[in-house]
Structures are given as structure tokens and as C-alpha cells.
Length: 522
Image: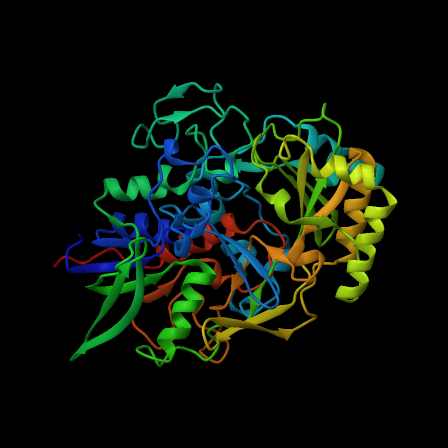
């Protein structure tokens, strides 16, 4: 168990929480990180996503894995749990947003973000061990062919990824931090990044920020969930008492710990959910903007499945390339390792339609048009080997709000059009990709029937603003209304990046921590 008093307590160990832990410890502060998920080592990750107990986070079924699926009225959300947060399950991709990201949203007028964040992006890339994907695999070559056919070959590029390539399966001393980090093993291109890297090649946060933070004396407390934060004032002195409980045990005991400062870093589903609860309880001065301006990155996840047994889409890193089909649209081919075929259980043909009856009718029509083809596609022996997921993202902005419901949070459209699983641009790109790959497009049943889009990059809900009427935090990530309280995770993202946001969360968190002075021990 941790001690009873800290300088800072960090709630969550994802990108923002890990940055905060290391940088605060370097400044001399005593730090505790509380994480709801489990601590996973390389050997603990599942061999495939059929091992639901180790892959999915469903505590009610005693599943304590690294990925969580959450469904609201307007959006289905994929997120990460565990020591290292989303870095355990994400696709390693480190992309910088286009200029539109810095010039829109509630934070646009607070600074020249493109210029101001530049050095922190560089720091983040170095810390996360960014490297260019060394070779294109099958799904990537098909994407490149699509770019060529659309006369936009220069807008296709390999991704920068947080992976140690080195010699495949060869373990070497720490190659990143002058020997202060852990040993690393060269990537063997198995494609298993998103079920957890079993070969010690993925530069997840437990291999860099968190590893170094623990060397500095940071305490990490896994399998515990913070349920209350109370402000304790004594004259001019302010402290916070946090109540947390067991997250993986049947009997959930409660504990208390105090600190001088708090960093919320539990991601949108952790931080925003907790802040909404606290605003109505112990932190009533929180901005009314809590839960507002939630963004989905305007995504679509489209499975392209081939009946050709000779094709192997599973080799490589999770995402090896990206195609910018126009100024605000991006497409990436995503892979799983051989044997990871869980997603096949809920897929239906990707068809457009303005309502459920039209879509259902068109799905039936698709089956009748090519029954043998669909039979082959649904019965492929190794689904991951013969499929690729097309991740479609756009800068186009629309926002939701998350509010307290009777039993759980509820979503509501606040600005722009309602998020949809049937984006015309996504359909066109998927069809063009299918012509090259020889496959057919499928989407998850929640999208095909119920028109609930999916996203792996839920953002916002505690955005930046000039004051509490515009946002929940200021430009330096400080929570309005409370001293020494910060938010550093995806909920702080105040515009739509249109690309994988992990690098941006890391960079903004680096900037926020740079503003905190070193501890004065006098």
C-alpha cells in the first residue's frame, strides 16, 4: 500500500499520466499514480484477441484485459486499461495533426499552438522511441496503389511508430536512455501490437516514461479506482483527500490518501465520468463545461476481408502507412496478428442507408447477390490473416456532450451533425480499396444496423478556455476554480486532430508539466 501523503497524485497511467509522473518526479516531487487496470508484462498479454479474459476489460465477467468497449447512444468507444493506459493496446502510431487542429476549437485563441508545441512534439517523439516503419506490407502496398490511382502518391507515407525495430527477436541493452531504461527486443513484424506486444518490441509507456518515473521513486498502484476527490482547506493551505477502491476484487475495499496536488489522467471515459460525479458532490466549483465538446475524430472502422488464402495481411506493425486523400481526410490500414479473429463475430456488409430498415434490406440483398462469396468470407480459416481494418479519420468537426444519466453517462449532440457510421467519403475509399485488394467491406453490427459509429480516439469533455465559461482548464492545463489541480489526457484535447492523437496528448502534457516549478524544499 502507498504512504498516506504525497505532493501529487495522478489518476491514470496513460500518455498524460505517464508524462506527469516522470516530469514531476524529476522536479523533486513525491508522486503516486493510481491505475484502475492491471500491470501487464510482455509474457502476460494474450496470444490472440479470442482470449477475452486478458484482452477485454469487463469486470462483471471477471475479464481484466487491456481494452475496454463502451457504447452510448451516439458512439461506440474503444479505450485502454492497465499500467501504461492506452499505450498497451494502441497501434503505436505517432502522427502530427494538420494546421487546422491548432486554429479551431476552444483553445485556438489562447496561443500559437503550432509553434508553441513544436519542441514538445520533438521531446515526445524521442521519449516514445519514434521510428519510420521500415517496410511496407500487403495492406500498405494496396493503400499506396490507391493513392497512385487517385494521382496523390505524394500524399502516401509510412507511419512513424513507437516500436524498437533492431534485429528481429534479438534482445539488447536499453537503446534509448543511455542504459537507464529496460532491455528491448527487435520487432518481428507479428502484427500483434493491439493485443499487447508479447515480444518486448513495442515502446509502450511502461518501457519509457513510467519505467524512468519508478526509478525516480514514483509509486504506481494498479487495480485501484479513484471514486472521490475532496478539497481540504486549512487557512491558506489546500490539500486533497482521494478515496479509491479495489477495481479487480469482488469485495471492493475503500482507502484514503492525501496530496497537495492532483492530475486527472484517466482518459475521457475515466476523467470526464469522475469530474461529472465530483461536480455534483465534492468539487462543486468545476466549470459547467465539464462533459462538453466531446469529439469522435469523425472516424469509421471498415473491415476489408479477402477470400484469397494466399494473401496475408497480418504481417508488420499494427499501422504501417497513412494516406491523406484530401486536406482533411486520412486512411490507414490496420492489422492484427494471425489467429486474432474475434471481430468476425459481429460483422455485416458495409451498406449505406438513411434508416435501419433500408440498411437491413440492403444487407439481405447483398447476401442474396453473392451467397457463395459471403459464405467463403465468413468462414475464412484465419480472419486476421485475410483481413485488414481501414481506419478512416477526418478533421471535420462535430461535438457531443456527456451528461449524468440515471445509471450511467448519456451522450447528446451539441454542435454540428450527428455522428454517423455511414460517411460517404469513407464508403468511396473503402470501395476503391476493395477493387485493388479483391475483398469486400464489412462493419460492426452496431454500425451496420444501429448507425452508431465507432472510435478508438474519443477526445474532449474537459477542454481549454480563457476562463471557466469557455473551458474546464486554462492553457497550462490548470483546472479553473482549484489550486494545483491539472488535467492531462485525451479529455483536454480542444479541437479535432483528425489523426491518431497519442503524440499530441504526450506533447501537450509535456508542455503542461514544463510550467510547474521544481519543488522548493526550504
